[in-house]
Structure formats: C-alpha cells, structure tokens
Amino acid sequence: MERVMGGGMLPLVLASVGVLVLYRILVRRRPGAALQDAVVVITGASSGLGKECARVFHAAGARLVLCGRDAARLQQVVQELKANSTGTQHQTYTPSTVIFDLADTSTVHRAAEEILKCYGQVDVLINNAGISYRGNILDTHLSVQRDVMETNYFGPIALTQALLPSMVRRRSGHIVVISSVQGKIAIPYRSAYAASKHATQAYFDCLRAEIEHYGIPVTVISPGYIRTNLSLNAVTGDGSKHGVVDKTTAMGSDPRDVAQAVLKAVRHRSKDVVLAGPLPSLAIYLRTLWPALFFKLMASRARKERKLKDE
Image (cartoon, helix red, strand yellow):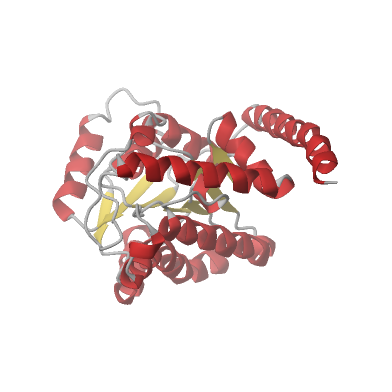
C-alpha cells in the first residue's frame, strides 16, 4: 500500500510545484502599490537583509524608521543611505532610528511609542531581526532554546501587538515578517531556530485571518539560505557563538536580491512568499504530501552531518 501511495503522490507533488511557479509568474505581472512617502519600520536594520531592505525601501521613497541594538551601526546605515540618495527615481528622506533590544520584550512597548513619534503612523512594519542556532538537541541548554524564541518569536509579536492598535484605528497598515523555509520544514541540528520560525508562521497566519476585515494585510516571507552573517552569529547548544559561515550560507542568495523580493511582496500585498530554490520548495510539498519520504531524507541528512562532525 505504501508503495502505491508513494508512486501516486509524486505526480501530485510535481503538479503542485508547477502551480506555485505559475502563480509566482502571475503575481510578478500585477501592478504594485507605490511606496513613496510610506512609513516603513525595519527591525534588525544595521546589517544583513535588514540593511539591504533599508536600501531598497529608501530608494523607493519610503520614510524609514530603522531599528536595532547598535546606535553607531544604525547611524552608519543612515549616512550610507543619505550618501546614495542622488540619482534615485523618487524623493528620499533621512531615516529615523530607534534603539532597543527586541529580545527584551519589556522595552518593546516604549520602543513602539518612539517609533510612532517619528511620523505619527506606521504604514509597513517589517519584522526582520532574528538569530540562528546550530546544535545537537541532546547537548542544548533549555536557556538557549528560550533565548532563540525570545528574539525570533516573542520579540516580533510584542512589537507587532504594540503597533497594531494604531493601524486598526486608521484601518490601514501592513504587517510583514521575515520567517524562513525552516518555518515550514524542520531540518536536523536547527531545532531552536526551526521551532521559533514554525511558531512565527503560525502566529502571523492567525493574525492575517483575524485582522483581514480591517484591511491590514499580513505577509510572511520565507527565504532559504542568504549570504549574511546569520550562521556566523548563530548560537550553539551552550550559548556560545557558532563562529562559522556555513557552506550553505556562503552559497545562498544575494541579500540584495532577497530585499528586492521583499519590496515586491510588500507592493503586491502578498500573503505567503517562499524565496527558495526548487529543492527547498519541493521539500515543503513533500512534508505535506509525502511525509514518509521527507522524514527519510531528513534522517539521511542527520547521518551525514554526524559523520562530518566525527571526522
């Protein structure tokens, strides 16, 4: 019976991937909303994807509020954006900055008040800040699991819930969260990260349904590997830094391309966007439509990683 089901599922999986590709093509052809003068808040804006998002939204004429923990690095981003303003197609503004630690949820409400003071409203909130993890579950302290969840899950939802009432009053706004392919599938030695992104996916899916009648779209963007310092700064099972740029990360997507895709998703008010190659996209469908095969593939991946660590 399992063989019959397996053989019958493969065409369905391939057909589903084909439908997804066709949908993406159709979405690209739709005219997008203008972002000139829109107030766009970006967390984790001092480096990586957040910094690249700041560049593309600034070039599109948005009024930016850049958020992060390091005031000096954020100010450097502001100076770079100001220096590159000449030659853009739109009028550009000098970005504002709000300094706070997203992992410290006790400070988020105050930060939300500061954000609203910048321009009096928020048109687009991009929850981008996050931390990654590499480790064996057996050797991982529970405190590390909590820390990753605080940054990747509780921080973004705290900021979202603090800013959401102002959007509801205006019946206008857009909530965006940068999740991950690992919010849809779990791979070995990424438990804390994958769990935080699965929780993020679930929360924002619920939020989308609950606030649709206010006219406030919710976009979940799930990239694959991106060439940033995410793996370098990842925490390990004992809380220390991973300190290594993984091969998968080094071969990942250019963050500038991903930032452009985020801009496009915001303009089109997309609901759920996977920014990954054919294999990760196929894996997402396998997890749903052919889980037995997916589990075998993940077990094989775990064996290979253990072998590499033992060598």
